[in-house]
Length: 449
Ligand code: XIL
Image 1: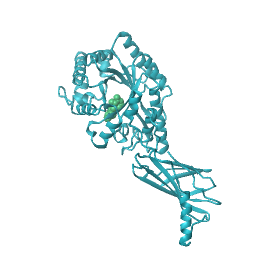
Image 2: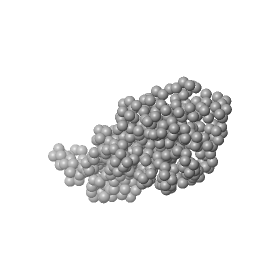
Image 3: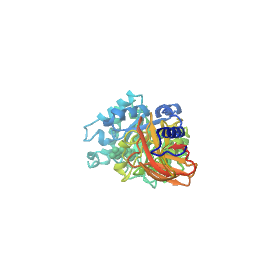
Image 4: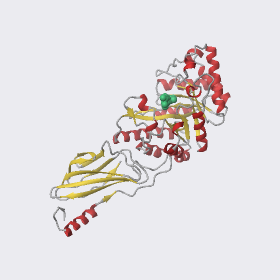
């Protein structure tokens, strides 16, 4: 029996349904979600951190931040304009909150940042101070902030973004007034302010081997030769989809060979919106490449993401039309990038683990049929999906709904529509299609990505 038509007898209808039932294909049983990233990282002796916003540390945001990460960086709370908005008047509330949260959850803190050209209070930048006054202000700032958290902040980005793209020193309030040795002065002062803290210079566009990273390399080498305290470099890694530098690992290795730690400090990978299943897959590959480069080098201590959810990322505000840069979507659903990070830290999840796709033929007549695919998740979630299959008997899709389907030869690929990419834990999404068949209409094996 191969046709099912309205108007048949109940008996033949039941026989037909039984036949269809036997044809139903279900993907392999869902695998349990993997261990949290921090447990995987601990097992590798690596750090996995996130930037956080103090005001958001409740509910799901706090749960995920505590469960998945073993380091925290205050995204803004420790910047000069945040801690001393007017001269001599300090506001430590958010920074304290984050340090307390970290201690309560067995996490280390990365202090960010002491000496920078940006996010300084206007009383400082517009104060008309002499170089001597600025030197005193800077040294006091280092003493005050590092002193407050002495012994509680594991590492400090002492100096942030000192270089131009061509490897020359950036002109800033500090280099202009103190000379370019402000970097050595700040590091020396920082060592005295908290001898237990690891001291870093942090910059962006220094992930691959290029003029800027070579300038940083030469600076670190000369600081070490001079006996200036320097424990590590921070590679921010604000990357663009598909543009992980091919020399990332080689660059990490050359810093490690200098005898300093390498930390990936502000990892995010932005894409042009809207996010699609293909872009999210590319992003996962990019996150994997970054993490693999770090895992491969002993001297790389680990990575911190600059916000773990797309709802708490600086990208949409700073790069018009870009976003979706972090490992979780705006509703805290782990994206393919999350699973890629887990895998590079030794985990075994695949995107879509905990989710299954089931193909069924819901109606069939002489040359046509209606099919559907149901995607259901148990303990994990999807933020976008793609279902692929190969038709085994010449079937062709003529029309689909609730998905965008393309067929090339026997290969069919369906991705979510703009409105149904999210499948929450315990939820499901169904899409349908009409097709043609002749001879037989076997149910294909579907894969979910
Ligand atoms: C960003 C914050 O995430 C934003 O909230 C803020 O508006 C601007 O600064 N390099 C750095 C970080 O070192 O401090 C920056 O953080 C991102 C670029």
